[in-house]
Image 1 (cartoon, rainbow, N blue to C red):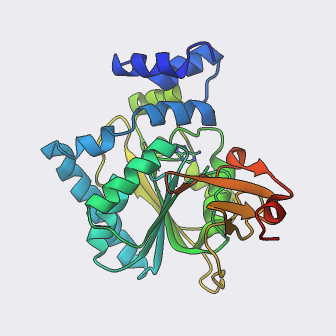
Image 2: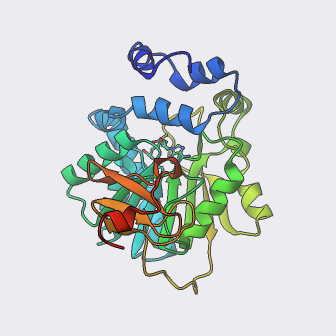
Length: 301
Ligand SMILES: C[S@@+](CC[C@H](N)C(=O)[O-])C[C@H]1O[C@@H](n2cnc3c(N)ncnc32)[C@H](O)[C@@H]1O
């Protein structure tokens, strides 16, 4: 990386598009995890701040009410996960409109966004929450662990990685997977050109079909904040008979249980310890430290 993160921060504050700048610097058409983490990490705080804007707040109310209605038309979930939760301004609205005590979960590539999400959810009186860092391609949750998994524009910047991401989201889902993502195939030419330039995701319905998933619905969503980035909703149903596992957070590499030892999360399968920073478990594969003797040294083995 030629431009340092400190320099990128000041360029962001001057209004530059950081992912475009980094793609150009690296000669790439698509975003990498690093580009996404830096670009979104630098935006931390902007979503919460936008809730002060009456128009944005109204949009968010309508958007999250519609998501909650959709969920309730499918099932009464005991657990819900927003994958790529950002600052949890969508999750908080969905939970408020669900009007039920639901165990709720969220993860994001960006630690700062998760930290802000935690504070935001507390300020909104939301409880029963577990947040961590994680990657959509290696989700740190057990298989079949969450009744309803949904995304809201988080697959968006991961163009080229749609298939592994869908497979991961489907693995974690127990009953329904709901995607609120750019509707490339349903958009006009101008919107498509913009999505192409930004390296956005495509063809989620086609990929879900090719993976043999039961796609119940795929259409434009009635609420979109940017007409050049129209949201489509895709609803995928999963076999209801799957037995929920006894644990939820999992080793991102092997999807096996984690043990909390010395305020860290140890994966006995990977022999890796994942840190908990500022109360947030950091469960991206690259966050792990290979520590085969960790349990022994900590007096827990
Ligand atoms: C457009 S924001 C939407 C945030 C939130 N879902 C909402 O509705 O407000 C996209 C979010 O997805 C996260 N994200 C993008 N790619 C990701 C990945 N591969 N793994 C985890 N999070 C990701 C970004 O860090 C960012 O916070």
